[in-house]
Length: 247
Image (cartoon, rainbow, N blue to C red; front, side, top):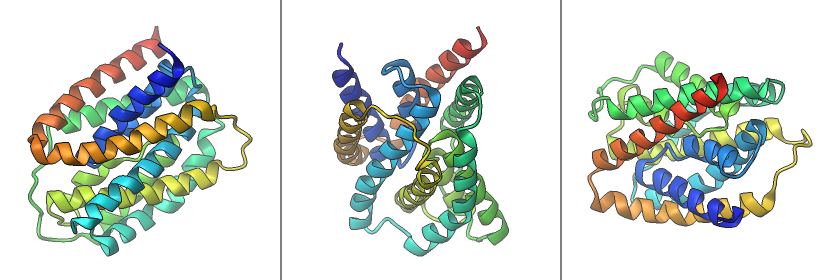
């Protein structure tokens, strides 16, 4: 199977997850780039940010059209994560490749477990500014350090901390992902890292198209079914990555 076909298939899966679940696709993008397309962990996390940023913008427009984006709330939540995203993004390029891979695997495993045992989909009814700021900062740091959008963390935080209904939290998470990913990319700009655009470009294009299909699929298939299926795949990928680092 050629690199082009692999990039197209992997990109479509990432897009489906982002469009259907409002997050999670980026935690598959990085291992796909490493193990299927021979990127280094540093290259994969940077390429992952590019892919996730462009795909999230695409998915965001669809949710915005349906009125499912809380623009002010999402912008304030994301603002708390901009500085941590920039700092973590700059630091990531100076860390050992094995450490990046292991850290990514742990976060992916936690994300999968979090999806298998989702929090309540009901808003709490009370906004806690301090907790919201801490959650936003933590999300930004994860985005910058590991090259993931963090939707798997943003959605439950927006529901439990900022009292958004689930559907609105999914749409708003895409705004948060976009802002944090752009901040992290800014930190990595000018590092001289080489990316294979013959792979990144078709991967991104397939992810963008997949995001539209994912949004349509989410209206036809029960959300919990999609989430649990994705979580099982993600957990398996995380275990394989940890084994690869430790063995």
